[in-house]
Image (cartoon, rainbow, N blue to C red; front, side, top):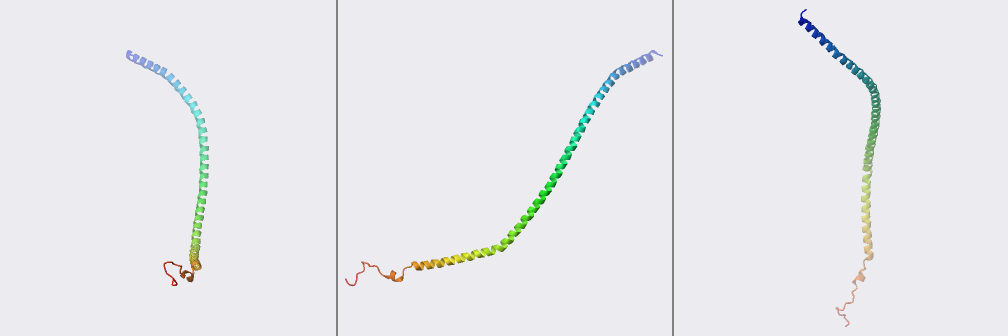
Length: 152
């Protein structure tokens, strides 16, 4: 074999030894990192399981609350509809009663007003006749000094 070939083979063997010498600690470190990562993932997995369980229970509670809220809103909607219907009925009844009662009340009020005015005029006329002096009393002349009497 030639020396160049021997040198090349020797350099290649040294390179492989150096490469393996560096790779062995790197692989050992990688193995340690992988083992640590595996342990942390296992711990994280148990914590995630707890979080998932808590999240599921929270979602179930939220779903229960929303279904209760929907039921209560449906009940409130029924009550509002019922109140609206009763209000409309009451409005119709008030309108009908107003139509039936309003005309007679206004007519009665007009009749009472006319009767009151008539009675008050009659009362006024009667009271004026009683207070008016009679014609004889009002016609008697008062003694006046400016008019001479016939006997003087």
